[in-house]
Image (cartoon, rainbow, N blue to C red; front, side):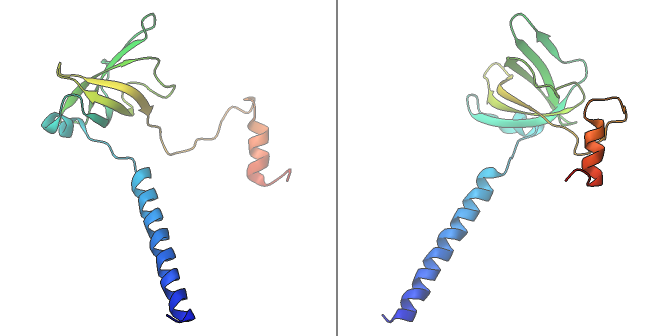
Amino acid sequence: MNRRGKFIVGGAVIAAALGYMIYAGVTQSAVYFVTPAELRASAVPGKAYRLGGMVVPGSLKWEARSLELSFTLSDGSATVPVRHKGTPPDLFAESRGAVVEGSWTADGYFKASLIMAKHSEEYKAPHDTTQAGYKELIKTLRGEGR
């Protein structure tokens, strides 16, 4: 094989490896979750799932002493009771979105090992001008102090 052929083969191998790394990185970083209706339709006890939905108002119960948290997730058509041992995240609340990781139990509830509270993508600037950091925020937005 001549020198030009070796460069073409080497370039193709490098391009293929780079393409595979990009594909693997994108598929592993994508966050997928099942809805309560999907979980109810095909749940296998003991299998790990990522479940997403809205926390049903009035369903949130937390025992501070035992750190037992229970709530219900809904997608509008089905609900799933969830139990977790530990403190809830700061943004976690009723009528808000949440994604939980864990497994479906044979007893008919979802045992969560991790709770991820979803938040709004909208940024709201502080309106209280006495709030700490307000002046620094305004300076950076105006491009001052660089």
